[in-house]
Image (cartoon, rainbow, N blue to C red; front, side, top):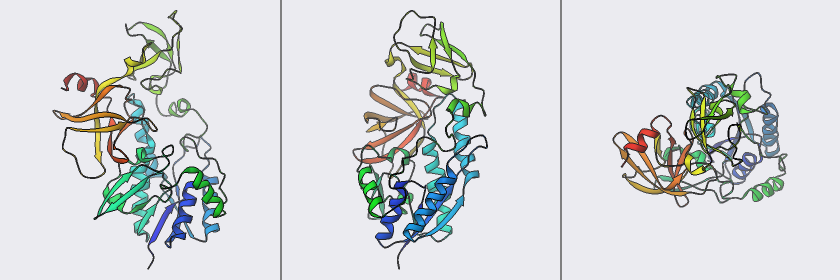
Length: 360
């Protein structure tokens, strides 16, 4: 008897091709549109996306379901994101969405409603053997999304398929035309649906105080103004004005203080970098390594991996870079061994400076 797989249909080409490939492989496929939260003051595309998802199901002749996870999304993703910005961090809601929604609430709902496994249109791969599972980078290095999936574990991966992980984006488009899918040429979505076409500043000011404040130089002198400290991240060079300096050189954010609504900047980008940082919410996809351990890491999506060492200093988990590196609080730092995604953590803003001085 064929296994039943519930595929998250977003209305985009990647999930559509995933459903088509699974049906072709002999699975009993059910397409599911996941409705997420959106604020009343923003026009989102979810209704259009749902219609596109239904068109995919109709084209492929598969069952279609819809699940409303907007309350879970608001509580587990949006609220967490806003609180992170309030702390002066730059969060990554895509990581939280995968952990709590797609491979959390949705996966459980799918199993409760008859699914043996789930599938998504993520660009990633898994390797299964002897009851274990590893998370691997996608074939298409430019589209690889393992960075956003680093908080999954072996059990998640054993019950999940990523059908387009072995394809390039060009090949996915070609498959979509082969299967006569209605969104073969649909543009990829950009940004977060619940933010829509408004700026992050306009979105955040509905929930937190976002006011103009002082820009300081490395001497603590006021040299300009910014639009709200919560909107800035380490290494950023735009979005603020420098009016007290004769120099026309670019300036880079070196610290963010949301409590006093101030940011500090420097003409030297290296001043925004750290050699050691503390991290929280450390997670390993598979077997826990013995610390210290040397691996490669990304602190941003599509960033070139850099060598690091992971260790402990008292109760803190410490990451030491071989070379100074910009690591923005709130972002994910994801660990790799070649093509294998080992896991990751969240760069911590609360103990970073203490960590830097106490680590050895």
